[in-house]
Amino acid sequence: MKNHFTFVKICSYLILSIGIIIVIFPMYLTIVTSFKTTAESAENFFSWPNSLFLGNYVDVINSNNFLVYFSNSVFVTVFSVFLIILYIPAFSFVISRSLKKQHYYRFLFYFITIGIFVPFQILMIPVIRIMSSISLMNHSGLSLLYMSYAQIQGVFICTNYMMTIPTDLDESAYIDGCSIFRVIYSIIFPLAKPIVATLGIINILWIWNDFLLPLLVLNRSKSLWTLPLFQYNFKTTYSFDFNIAFAAFMLSIVPIMLVYLFAQKYIINGLTGGSVKQ
Amino acid sequence: MIKNKKNELQKFAITLPGFMLYLFFFIVPLIMGILYSLYEWNGISREKVYIGLSNYTRLLTDIRFTSSLSFTLYYTFLLVFMTIFIGILLALLLNTGVKGQNLFRTVFFFPAVLSLITVGLIWNEIFYRAIPSIGNSLQIVFLSKNILSNITYAKYGILFVNLWQGVSIPTVLFLASLQSVPGELYESARMDGANAFQSFARITLPFLFPMISLVTVLTLRNGLTTFDYVKAMTDGGPGGSTETVGLLVYNKAFLELEYSYAITQSTVLFVIVAIVSAIQFTLIKRRSEV
Image (cartoon, rainbow over all chains, first blue to last red; front, top):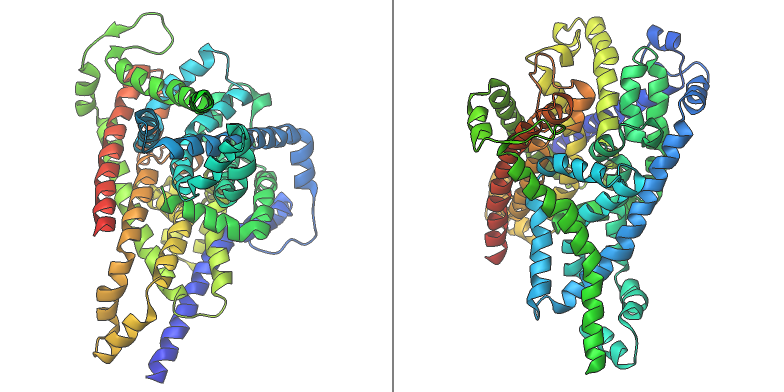
């Protein structure tokens, strides 16, 4: 019995370790390649870099408007997520309080939630027509799209959470003469912190990493590109100088990696909790 | 009373921006798309010709579309199956009381926070530069060439990358369900003489079932609408063998300017995704009511 048990243990560790190696392997190659010269990589793709060669990073940052793309990504992500966490919890709060009493709110809830069934491909073509006809093929337009689509999952998870907050709190605040905005932002928001955090995390990751929407909305004007778009176009432009490409990958992964290291618990809970409730 | 009315009005006002955005950027394009599929139109010219269901009948005889659709379905089937299998396997192993469970979990989850396009581009370079050199030095013929340029195996290269990133969230979800199984159940099963397989089938699996349905829905959607990985790695090649419907719609609409026909193709995707999600939702609902 004891022997059987240790055998299972050893197998578990073995398979899990192989899993770890498979997960880490591409990350390792990305890091070492970004610090090597092309000649060094050609000699041995897998080896540790001989020296801490920063030339690839310097090239990416200097010659390709990298800082413009980086700040575009930061702007789009921050602006969209700001709109999302400011608005969607308030919207959901209002729905949650009248869902059972008024048809309009029940209709809204189901009407928005039903969007879960629709793949983006069917609307992407008309959306781009609409966006270009009202001259919104830019960062503000992109942020409005993120805000609109974030509602589909956001309203669903937030409304369910808001239902668990007792109604006496807001009702007594109204009696004390608080306005609805005061109730939402000074009473409900502090109580709904966990769901606001989840909403923020899901959308920060989605928007920072998204490729399809920027490809559709921003591809025509190079100065508006976000990082994923820059990386994709890099593939065609710099196919020979792949060490530079790896430095570009690193520069967009590092911010996310740092956030992951510090807020790992919240990110895991956010991404898994969000999908459980979807 | 007046106060109450004001409050109701303010509530209504709060819902307006979200409702309008959703209407304008989601519902209107959805309806426009379905209407456009009844026309012959390149998306640029002023002229639209009404052709009824001709775009739909064209789909049936369009070999590029049918092979793209069957590739997408095959790919999605494998993706769902493998995701569940690997996810459960890793979760079971993590749940055997290994030391450093949190460390393993941290590493296994990490791919979930990366951008699909970045992951695709990194693996593309690895398939092109790293794997063949391993294959050559170990004398394994299969690995000595770039798998992504092989017409038969390119799809499995993409599938591998998709799994590399796609099993991270399911593994954590399965682990959470496993941890919710009361330990006494296994204890009493062992006393009744059940072997490991029996207690897995009778105790663990029923606990996992809701999560399996959920992971199936999430993965089905991702599989059916696959775009980023293919765009990053093969761009549909070699020989169109990895052209998913998601990519085909994009190519038709924005590169080949067959605007209304592209929408027709995406309508088919819409119907499949909607049916699949509806089935899964009723399954989950029935399950949670029991």
